[in-house]
Amino acid sequence: MSANLSAIFYLISGVLFILALKGLSSPKTSRQGNVFGIIGMIIAIVVTILSVGNFSTGLIYVLMFLLLGGAIGAFIAFKIPMTAMPELVAGFHSLVGLAAVFVAISAFLKPEVFNLGMPGNIKIVSLIEMSIGASIGAITFSGSVIAFLKLQGIMSGSPITFKGQHFINALIGISIIVLIYYLCVTQLPNLFWLIILLSFLIGLLLIIPIGGADMPVVISMLNSYSGWAAAGIGFTLENTALIITGALVGSSGAILSYIMCKGMNRSFFNVILGGWGGTDKTLDTKNSEQRPVKSGNAEDAAFLMKNASSIIIVPGYGMAVAQAQHSLKEMVDTLKNNGIKVAYAIHPVAGRMPGHMNVLLAEANISYDKLFDMDEINDDFACTDVALIIGANDVVNPAARHDESSPIYGMPILNVDQAKTTFVLKRSMNPGFAGISNELFGYDNNYMVFGDAKATVSQFVETLKE
Amino acid sequence: MEIDPFIFRFSIFILSIFIGYYVVWSVTPSLHTPLMSVTNAISSVIIVGAIVASLSGNNENLFNLSNILGLIAIILAAINIFGGFLVTQRMLQMYKKKKKDK
Image (tube, rainbow over the protein chains, first blue to last red):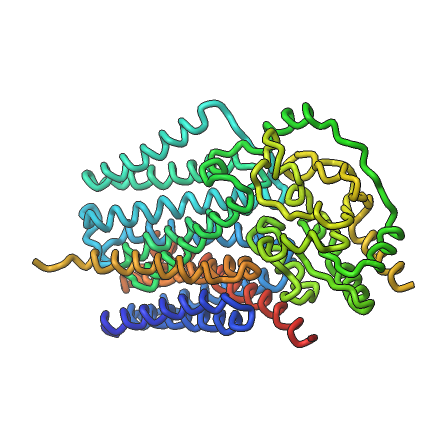
């Protein structure tokens, strides 16, 4: 296949990838979008095999490994529970990163295959491109591995900080750039290995100081990195499909990071520099003269809901952990049968990755047109009878609005306190993920319903059906 | 003077960033998780580099380091491609079921 023809096909697959993302603008078109993405990928793979035009035994190995990886991937995709999506995505990012590193090394060892010159005499531009691709790929890999370990709970979610951390990171960052410069001048392979090694190291160092509560930002950020790594390799291989895709993914991840940061009212740099959640606890004990909370039992709460005319449910990650979403769906159906208006309010950082809560509720067959973003629903709380908060905490803490000393001051929250009555379903009075006590719990119109969320919701259902 | 092909690729890159910017902002927030899994899948188009690397040097010496790295990269990327698209499909399927219920 001629180079021009294959370039046209790569362009087509790039366009199909754009359409794949475009399809996600509505759930109706999303499945078609996914099909576009798959077609784009098939085109890219077939065209590559045809344009290399090497149909020796090597091709059999390629197909074998392709199917082997595919089988593993398919197995994971069908087995993974939806609560574990953040871990899965972090794990997948690490694979993209590592693949980028391997391709870059391969190009460095055999540049003649990719038309980049000869070993020891590689084109300067290509050297820079492959170093950047390999470096970002390595950062994506080690960073994602740490994120994966933290999300899985294998590694503690609390930030790991030490003195001079930022200084060391900056030093490593600068050394990588200097090394790339010397690599271009001297073409010494050892410098290339050193660049990759340092990049693995800095990926690790960048993620360990970031606390568990900030994981949604980290995942989005690594998503972005994996895109830039792909783009870097795309430049090296002079491949349009890779360049387009890398740019798409890179900007997608960047936008998601931005949305997540905004949802927590934190600047991107604030998150990156990390250490959040560790220092707050000391600060918190000082002003935790929490007012006495009122606790109610499930039957009373159910009775109140039965007599309400409108209810807004605020789900959080705690709901997913308790696996309460299916009982919740049953409860909502019962309420609807009684003619009660029910809606769900989804905070941008509900769950542990962007849009996570929506997927968890979708899994429980809750219709997506009942889910509302914070901006859409926040004004409705004032004319709502009951706000039911399940497993969410910081996102409904009114302290974010007025208490300047609170670490979450300024964070946009759901205005649940404006509802006539609020119920908070919670296991105990322990503060949430970020370790901040919640002012709402002491409010006069708030009732705590302690216990396992799933058991409590099931109790609601029983009482409602009586 | 002729324009360096690099500049053309760079132009494609920059324009694609802008396309990505506008397309991703139009993605509904409720589909942000599928967005991440699908971007994951498509960024594994890096497999094209892995294929070239593993088929390189059509001589008998099939297993030099560069080919082996290519083959490993194929596995990694293939896990991602199949896993990414299928898990996205699985999630999007959930959004469909409820529509039929109604």
